[in-house]
Length: 73
Image 1: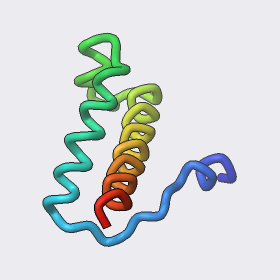
Image 2: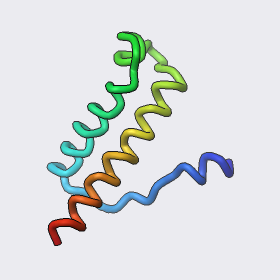
Image 3: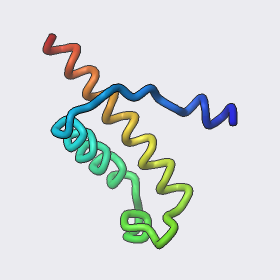
Image 4: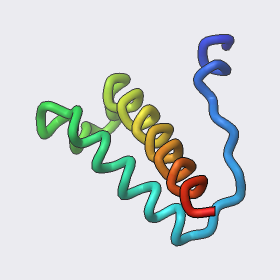
C-alpha cells in the first residue's frame, strides 16, 4: 500500500475542457513510449507496463498544465 500511496496525486475539480486537454496531452506522452501496437491499443486486460506509462503520462500532463497556469497568472 505504501508504494501505491506514494505514487498518488491530489486531484482538484477540473472542468470538462481542461480534462480533454489533459487527456490529449497524456495520450501523446504515453504513445511516445509505447513500442508496439499491442502496447498502444492493449489487450482486453491491458498490461502493467501500459498502465504505468499512462499513469506517468497523466502526471506529466498535469505538471505541464500547472506550469502553463503559473506562467499566465
